Image 1 (cartoon, rainbow, N blue to C red):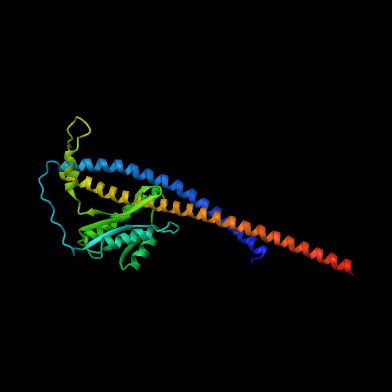
Image 2: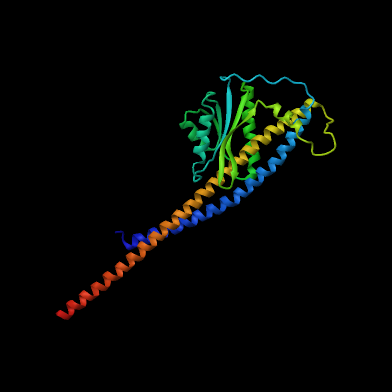
Length: 288
């Protein structure tokens, strides 16, 4: 049985650990709210870009792009985390990437997050580069710009297909790893919007040159797609961390109750032993 002093130290350590867990849980709850706001705002902006591409492509005569051959050079941007204590988030994303590219061959990989980069290296992927995950919603833009620079470099080297792999945020406690094709752009998806009713009575049109407008919209489309993937990944990571901290807090609470019971029992045993010593000493003195 553990000594009373050791039990006291363990009980105090659990109290300190609980304080840390509560702080991390509070920070996760605040951050996930900011990331969810970013995701919602990007949804509206993405819809605007989507409708703009629909208007530009509506009366454009074009031929469907030939599918890329299975062995064509490809790239993948995989979003994970730099820090742990977020459950199986990085494992889930990396395992999804392995399954997604099992039939197409291993792509060149840009990892956003040191933890997911490590998991992908274990799985046999060669990592071109690893970027630091944005530390806040305000830092997502800088991260996205770095990702786009790498993608431009890949395009210059002849890579035509680029996929985004990230955790899609479903709720504060749920996410699902997904793969989204960034390049080549599926223009048919924007033309299919023709079947949807327009939001006003005014027929949509534009005044600037078609090529210049299409190029500007595509730049915005790439930016928004990468930004959205980054924001959803951050929201998913934070949600996973929040769930992990809630589970840790519950486990610590249960363990602290057990330690408290053991501490009280040890105190009682010490008091009982001291009383028995007193009684034995009294009886010994009385007999003498």
